[in-house]
Length: 384
Ligand code: SF4
Ligand code: SF4
Image 1: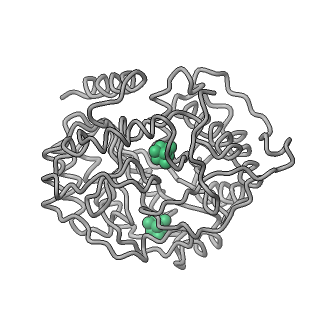
Image 2 (image 1 turned 60 degrees about the vertical axis):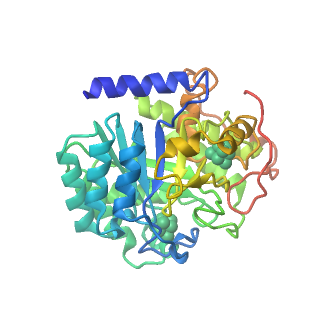
């Protein structure tokens, strides 16, 4: 299938998601391992023993459930799996519609990451291969948050070498939390001094969330929301000039993140369990990484996602999410499909403006939200 047809199918699915609940998700977030070689303070994945799906089970799943246009492979650290090249091969072999394959990495296993990514990129399929190297602060902050000495240096080396791979789009991803609020400028400056041409457009920022079933970090400390909001405003300001489509989308994501921080309510109707879903490393299907509402096991459904998707319980949960009955969040995994599913409401067409965050004009009153340490809301706002 040509790249043009794949893109057309993705665009069609995004348009359809504005008007109806989809019969199969076009986006999959797939946790392929719970193993990790970092010891992050904000995440308990590395502490939690899990039985990952075996390669044969992953192959069976992708062979039967393959109408995805966009797949995020996540962990843990996906490069901890020795059979990762076979998993990539299965994704490419079985998913004919795939447009975008994305994965995050902590960048620690440098040579391994470069070798395997180069092999995937050399296939030229899917049309877009995007890699996010996670860096959460300048060197000392990053290493402390990650619990591993030298983590920053290795992540930077990985990113620098990924930039040299043809057909690969590497980004740096920074997650703002109680542990690194106020570090955006220092992080940007550290990376800019080490990487020629590195600028605000290369540093992608999101906000930390709690997840009982994924990060298992319900005990994460309460962040200073005003500091987070200021930081988001700073990021938007730094990225304000570009009119490249990806930058417009990202600026809008950040703008809506500000609204989420202010209200604690998902700023757009969520399309989880319509446009997207999450599959854990044990093969359990969830609407997303945040909502602890397991729908069933792929193992019990003979690795056929459509069977779980069509169950009455899934239909009920889909309607509940559409009605706003869920913890609420603004994670990029689901925020991007939700923006695609609310094209008229998303504000993507608005001329970008930079303004101070409402929290600053409201004296920093503490809103409710699901960033770590906050009670999640149980309803969602109406359209903006
Ligand atoms: S945040 Fe990522 S790198 Fe850190 S422990 Fe969790 S899975 Fe590992
Ligand atoms: S808004 Fe609710 S259902 Fe949607 S991604 Fe967030 S927690 Fe999950």
